Length: 202
Image (cartoon, rainbow, N blue to C red):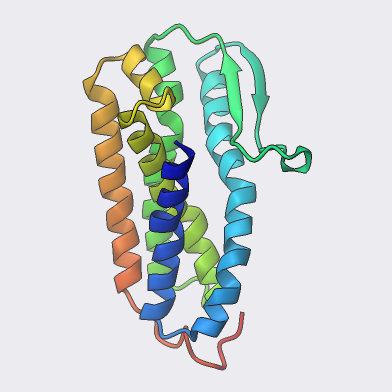
């Protein structure tokens, strides 16, 4: 499944950034330097943002946390994702716990699109950061977990199936991808005047 994840990072995180910067006439020499920095920031925050939602949902559901890892231990050579272990039994509370990060993804993508439209940040780096963390990461998170589940991975969507039934993970995955992809498409096609100008540094 690692190959699928790498492919989805390219399709739903890196490619949208390239398309966005090209749409805004940013010189390729600028965004070829910005994108690796944005990727590193995304990588360092992705697992934390995802697993913290599981952790919060576990606490709200009054379940017992057994163990957790909020970020990959890359300093030890571990480049996987984080995890939250708790007393999973496959009940309705567990469905809520599994859904929590993806409901957050949908909300963040919508918020990200609204903030982008309001032009609250105006430099190429800050606009890219806003879009990566709120919009494109949300699309990747849902697409990666849902599509790898379809291919046989035992992940959050598999736990949704155990906690509810075979239909729920597909509805959640397809709906989540549709909303976050729409938000991504809208920001890519919405040109921000002046973003690519030489005087607009950052």
